[in-house]
Length: 65
Length: 141
Image 1 (spheres, each protein chain N blue to C red):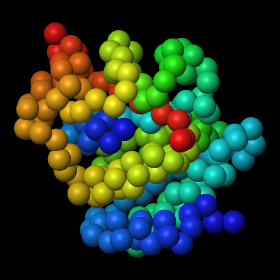
Image 2 (image 1 turned 30 degrees about the vertical axis):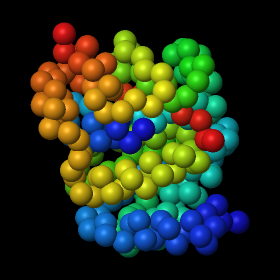
Image 3 (image 1 turned 180 degrees about the vertical axis):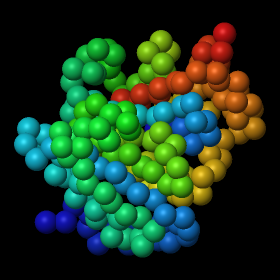
């Protein structure tokens, strides 16, 4: 979670939302959350589990293609 | 009854001791039909009481809809962690358990205004040309 907050801090274009899955079951269903943490970047990139920064950014880089 | 026990309060007070710039929790609640609204508000109020640099503003999701919209808040309970500016940090649902630590870290981040990310990460982020929303689904445990 902290990495998402750090990214929001770094860029005015990034917002970071923590979503407590149990309280928002509809949203969790919509994004097919089976385990946590599950990160959804821009609706398209899905990351299962807590990735270290370099691995997370490899996924993030897909946004720039 | 307090949500945070004395041991936790002591730890949080120490963690926030060097927070130098003011941070505000903008909390959106709804008195009815929101299971964790009360707990979320109480949690941030208890945290704010542990640092004179941290304050809480409580809003109603319905009565303050214009502000909620402007902050991109579309569900409650919600917290916007705002410092010298709004960096786009939001929490939907109660940040308890492991995420309580992230809540405390978010205060330090927003106060300092420095991300602490690696140089390569900063370079990549600088290439963004359109808004990006990162949603992280968590559970309280």
